[in-house]
Image (cartoon, rainbow over all chains, first blue to last red):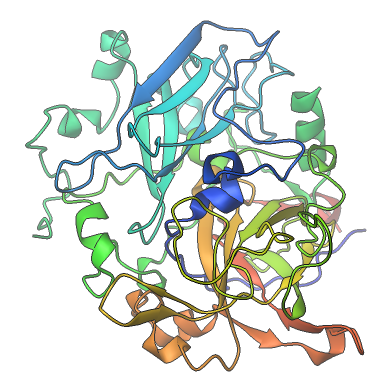
Amino acid sequence: MRVTPFVISDLPETPSQTAGPYVHIGLIPKQAGFEIFENNFSGDIAGPGVAGNRIIIEGHIFDGAGHATRDVLIETWQANAAGRYNHPVDRQDKPLDQRFRGWARTGTDFVTGIYTIRTIKPGPVAGRKGRNTMAPHINFWLASRGINIGLATRMYFGDEDAANAKESGLEHYRTPGAPQNPDRRQVRA
Amino acid sequence: MLGSRSSERLSERLIEFKWGNDSMTPEFEFHQRNRDLHPPAYTPIYKTSVLRSPRIPLWSLQNSLSEVTGPAFERDELGPLDNDLVRNYAKNGEPIGEQTIVHGYVFDGNGRTISNTLVEVWQANAGGRYRHRNDTYIAPIDPNFGGCGRMLTDENGYYFFRTVKPGAYPFRNRVNSWRPAHIHFSVFGTGFAQRLITQMYFEGDPLIPHDSIIATIPDKSAADRLTAKLDLTASRPLECLAYRFDIVLRGSRQTLFENKLQGA
């Protein structure tokens, strides 16, 4: 019988702190300007043999003044082309792609502010309790100077109107510029 | 190769998941994050946050497979010196500074240790200068110090690395703002919703009470947990001091159970 060292019901989470302006050193050292590790994580995860339609995701991350940031770390996490995550909690009856971890990491460019992810389009994944299949999406996580706690969001696909229309909660965010407030809370000024 | 081995490695962990009536999806989800323990996004004391905090309400999503899953990493993806910052960028000698051990455990909020999870660290050199093209502080670059390292926790959730103690440095916030000595940490856990980046400080640093970044955390006891304690028992006599820093990621609901204990 194996027993964990101890079990406490409620250990408080370690607080987040900003990744700072030099996040590249630790997580994408090539962008910081030097080579240190033999094996580097990258934003190109559609290697040879990975199943699925190749896609390139490109964009800017804008700050509150509308300026494109040039120092933000971006990580993405996604299902494979069949719509299954490479993780033991995902027991959907779909094939695993042995060559596809599903995780990418890159930064916005120091000059252009553009980030680029090369991956494959994920398939749709089952929703909670195995029901209400979710529209295909890629999970984004951002960290940088000025971001006190990592920002999580999702990217959906413009060519998936039917699936997107059924995605719960997404309708509140469909209109750029003036989003509805689904929780009816005050927006911080 | 990557996929199956990652999956097996995770499956070997102590945790097995309890299934609902629908065998496709586990009744597994992380506890809602206690935001009171974290800095809010908008903290004018740290000026850069003002333009980098969301202006529209956050989208509150219940955990789905997208949140409870996350990337796994293999030992052979890392190099043998990746967790030794004293040696992993040494060109013609050792870096200048106080050699220091930092070690601890990674837990989840349920008090379980998290094995085989990736821990990445980065820091300034002993003079307070980063090896980064955007850092122009007057302290010199150390030719033998890169300033980053990474490791997987072992089967007990334990991590360990050796480095030199970073120096304090000024930053542009107010006209005379200084960062206490610190090491940046990036940790994964088992699900992407546990993803965390934070900073570790050193016990006794007189700059800690003056730091605008630590001050973004409203809860004093939460902020105090970012200060690593001097750990004399783990120090190496006549060689280096050690600091102990444990990390806690989000816990999960108690619908998961110990497979091996089932029926015991």
